[in-house]
Length: 406
Ligand SMILES: *Cc1c(COP(=O)(O)O)cnc(C)c1O
Image (cartoon, rainbow, N blue to C red; front, side):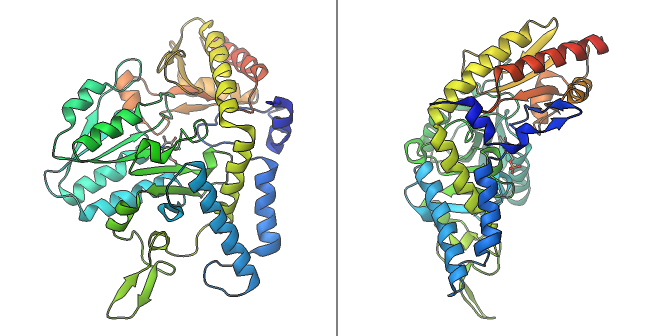
C-alpha cells in the first residue's frame, strides 16, 4: 500500500546531492517537492496544447480550456465544494486572501470588528490590517497559550454582533498546531460573521470537506501539495462570491464593455481577470490526483509516525526545546525548535553543509516569535516522502552543529 521507496522514486529532486551529501529535504512547510507526473504535465502542456483559454474556437484553445476546467472540477471534488464556479483559480493563498480582503472594503464600516488569531502567517494578517485602514474596522486577536494553542474562551469573549469576519489558519505553518476550525466557524456564524480559513498548511496533510465545515471562504496554494508555484484556489460560497465586487478589472472577467458601462461576467470568471496560470492550474489538478492515489489517510498515518519518531530523537539532545503542541495533541508534522544559547540561523547553516534543508527564522509569523520572546526557530517539516533515516541524519547534523557552536 504505502511503499516509501516507490514514492521517493517519483521525486527526481530527492536523488540530488547538496554539498556532497544526499539531500534531506525538511522544508516542506515552505514548499513541497514535485513528482515526475506533475513535471510531465507541465512539459506536456507546453509541448502539445499551449493556447489561451475560453476565447478561441480552435482545437488547441478548446483542449487547454477543457483541461483547465477539468482541474477546477478536481479541486471542487477533492474539497467537496457544492459548485465548480465556487472555485476561483488564484496565484496562491496570498492572492486569495487579498481578493477577499479587498472585497470586504465595500462591506465593512467604521466600528465593525474582524478577528484574527495569534497563530497567523503574515499573509493572513497584513491584508486585513490594510482593510482596517481603508474602512475604519477594528482588528481583534484570539490569543494563544504556551503550547501554541488558541485560547477558545478568549475567542468567545471577542465575538459580538459587531464581528463581521473571522480569519484563522487551519494549521499553523510555524508550530504545526491544528486549530479547531469547525468550532471557530460555528461560533462566528452564531453572531452572523463570515469565516475565511487559510488552508495553505492543511491541504498537504488533511482533506478538508468544505460543505461539512460550512466555511465561507477557504484558500490554499498548489506548491505546498506537490503542485507548481504560482497556482492556488479560493473557495467561496456562491452567495458570498456574488456579493463581493471584482478584485481586478481586465479581460475574461467581463460580460460587456463599452466606455459608458461595463457589466461583469458570472462566477468564476468575475474574479479571474487576464490570462491565468493555465498550465499551473492543470498541474495542480494532477498533483491532487497524485496525492489521492497515495491516500490522505496513509499520508497522515505515516507523517504522524515520522513526527513522533523525530520528536523523541530530537528531545534526546540536551538543551533542545520544541515549541507548539505536544505530539499527542492536535499537531501535524512540523517541529519548531531551538537549542539553548545558540542562534537558529547558525544551526540551519551548519546542517545545510551536511545536505539537510531546514528553515530558520520567524517563518512569516513574527507575532508568534514575539510571544515566545525568541528571534526565531529552526523548523523541520516533514512530508510523506521523508524517512526515519532522514530524521536520523537531521539529528546527527543538529548534534554536530551543537558541538561546534556551544
Ligand atoms: C505558505 C503559507 C501561506 C502563504 O502561501 P503563498 O503560497 O506564499 O501565498 C499562508 N499561510 C500559511 C499558513 C502558509 O503556510
